[in-house]
Image (tube, rainbow, N blue to C red; front, side):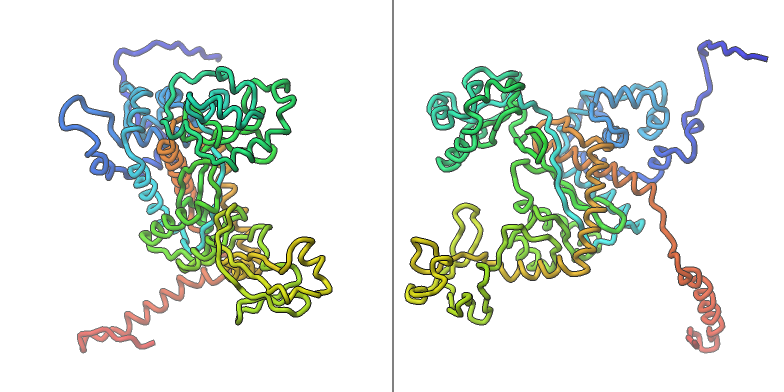
Length: 523
């Protein structure tokens, strides 16, 4: 017989939320393992002693974690989503007749707590993963990825004080005619300070920008889409975002220019647990940030009882200073050397004992001095031959060129560190580490950006971006934690472990000697 359901709201009903949530529900299981009670003591100093009670800090953090677990970056959407889910209400600790905090409360509380609070929660969750055996600690893979800032390229303004605008436009006149007009989309408020609005680039840097822009000068303003500043060349040396001054213009090959932050991530290679994450300015290079990452990562792993041994990263982190720094801290680097590295001129042989080079004609080119490369600021060593050595040389014209009188060249100060690193990278272990990095840290970044709320910032400023990245990493690690199961070895050795242990214990019990009042072992 066909049934028909008639709905009529009850004035009184017996309803228990815990009975409606299945035992294997994700948020029910997460509620059982996640203990955030330490937050009460940690955040007490950020509240007053009187007045209206605030939102429970545990509720705030749980709601934030739900946002990243559900891939929701809008606080308004997050509250609307949570209010419709019984399992999330149970996880947060709210009943069906209780109203969740407003979206503005979530935003204000996020700004109230400093970065250290979010980092402490991240460390606490990492400790949970360590206790469950998910972290090995000895090998860490490091990588970076840009994350879109909460600001538009259309709001970019020239990075120059008002009184110097005409003079600046004459220096870099190839930028665009649009820069002389009002921005395409005027920002509601300018959050930048005087230093961020002023040009800090020197004349050489401005000339370089002008040279690059000459290719665009003729038809730039007539191109399709020229109304968007992303359609033309822009530089952090000449432009800034009044909406988010900490955001920086960056570009990847084949992608449009955007205002981004840079996320630096470290992943343990054992079970892909995130061990460190931090936000940086997007105009910085990876090799400039490696030392800061390693110091923080080594300290955190030491506190967890691990010894950090192997640092695995891509070519972007390559530099002689970094190789020397890692060796000074007892770490082995598996970082492919940059393509520009040369141990000396082609055909020249280095003699380590005398710190000199031998040219193809058998002449010695001695070391003369140390210096700093004016373009990169890197430390180098200069080698120069005496003028009489090159006089009458049969390969003089091809070796020196037309104007030089003697052979002179510079080599990185860290040549030995480069060669030791290259030997490690090209070894069988190095090839294994390369595959390990590609299968470890890159998929983690893809998961964070596509499924864990890190595709775009919903905050303004570097400090707020760092909080958001930590929350995304916490959500990722918690998800890995609930999925993790200790895998038994496939060989028969694991199966023999229990019988062997029982046999030893039986012998131990039989060997007990009550007459002597002590235990003896007779294996």
